[in-house]
Image (cartoon, rainbow, N blue to C red):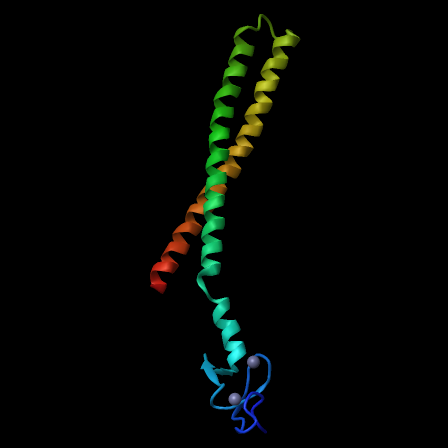
Length: 142
Ligand SMILES: [Zn+2]
Ligand SMILES: [Zn+2]
């Protein structure tokens, strides 16, 4: 069997990825396997910092969105308390439907705000953790 790239050379192995016959010139050993030159290029380009950068970008975006949601959540929380307080303080009796609806609106805002705060907190901490991980990986690569 001859090498697929070098017909004058005898093949000494088969690429673990594409199965092409390869000679000693084309062969690259990696983790107990041998690869042809084009497959090793593919493998190496797969492991570039591109993925790290994308991960870091994604993590940064998550953290930013989380921080924005937290901000909205806190503003919403404060205003919903304010709305409920206004509704309660202007209520003369429990059967006052107009002011009850104000309190109800305040309560609805509070619930929505609560959800936003939970999602924001999760996104923020996940993003923060991923940024830390990505940075640690970059440091260990260097
Ligand atoms: Zn190959
Ligand atoms: Zn060859």
